[in-house]
Image (cartoon, rainbow, N blue to C red):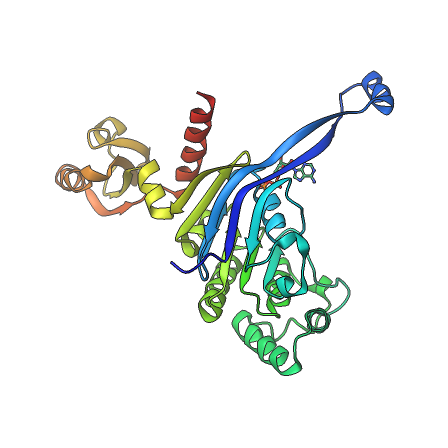
Length: 332
Ligand SMILES: Nc1ncnc2c1ncn2[C@@H]1O[C@H](COP(=O)(O)OP(=O)(O)OP(=O)(O)O)[C@@H](O)[C@H]1O
């Protein structure tokens, strides 16, 4: 494996927050004597990412994902631990480092609100000191990949959320960074725009060999883009490895979706496995992966089947099962 482009060792970020008690008396008291508590947003994580990898960085709300991405891009100083990205220490924010990375946050925007994206692009050209020819080449490539032709001339405030996100991505990539930190880049987008952004991220990764670390609550993004996932919960790493292996380990079962020619009572369906859902026209039965072929033969022989498909359990369920079991293990 080539040397890591992202290396994280013993990384921690603790926030000191003012604790406010409810009630007027407590509020007055807090004016004179403030009490603080420490939020351990990131609490000792280690991982390494090789150049060109696309890695999903996952976890439930408040797990510490955004905090980690901000430390990796140099926006936040770690409380403890070491971070190296493309050979640099992010918190020093050296110009050479900033030219290698980008952070895109789906919830924040960098486009200038009243101006067309083309003007933000020109500003970024100056900020990153991009030679004119290279800039024009990149703009034309990104315009074609993201279909920006009709968008870059309109003021950003007139663009739809999805159109704006495409321009945000272009603005963030004009300097051709080698490392992309994408924090929920598809949040709030409709399914077709989500798929456009996904295809674009993949195309950029393949074209430039860029490394991608991506957070998303949409498991379709993760399934489509990330062969590897790093999962954290409450500031700690709970899984780092192959996404398919994780699914097999956490949910070693399959779902058989059966379309029925006539209604079948649930009691009869349960002879073939655990009934996940059923109605007059179709049923979903869950069985262990090793038992799929036997169950399929029995279903075909014993039920009025018009169509049958075998599916993996949804990734959302794999993830919530992983969070549940890791919390149980942490509690015991
Ligand atoms: N500036 C801050 N000051 C104090 N606490 C913070 C600050 N930023 C984040 N936190 C806390 O740190 C924890 C981790 O937050 P973070 O935003 O990194 O989580 P996340 O995994 O990105 O969550 P989400 O999926 O909801 O975006 C949370 O408990 C959050 O309330």
